[in-house]
Amino acid sequence: EAQVTQNPRYLITVTGKKLTVTCSQNMNHEYMSWYRQDPGLGLRQIYYSMNVEVTDKGDVPEGYKVSRKEKRNFPLILESPSPNQTSLYFCASSFWGSYEQYFGPGTRLTVT
Amino acid sequence: ELKVEQNPLFLSMQEGKNYTIYCNYSTTSDRLYWYRQDPGKSLESLFVLLSNGAVKQEGRLMASLDTKARLSTLHITAAVHDLSATYFCAVDINDMRFGAGTRLTVKP
Image (cartoon, rainbow over all chains, first blue to last red; front, side, top):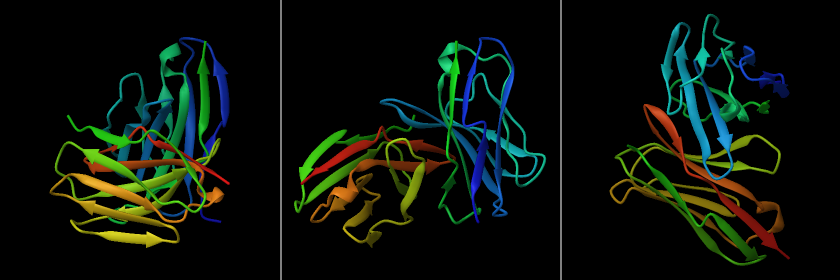
């Protein structure tokens, strides 16, 4: 089954404790992206990647890192999480040029 | 800076009625997307509009794009309860910018 998977789905952590949210897709998509969703703000793009080893900042990249060492994986790294990074995070992927993005199920992160 | 504005943000309508959701954006773009999100769920792609005058229809939903006016509309025809969801538009200029979403409730 074609899908985008994220892990973990739920995470409660404390300020400053490094964490990684994984994202994997099995559709051989070139383009992958991370978003955060906050009430009243819609989705805001954090980082995106057009292919392996190619990443770029989105609208709200501060406090986040990403890497794209393999085509299928695009982990989101929070080196020192803070409470303002409490949010619902979505990973998405698509073929370059198709524009139709497939979204993962979401990861709800709480930073206390 | 690119801004994407949707209105209304909340919409309650009766089954069988028609209505339109508007999406305005502030910078030239010829790529606009519509997504649907059910409560507690992920986003589902509805339409991708890639040129001025583009119109796409799926069931009771029809989306259009006017790049000169920087406006896209999502028209709902004869609404049914199953259309209750939050609808987002998004514009792609290097990075993706989403509107705040329109929460649609269709009442019997």
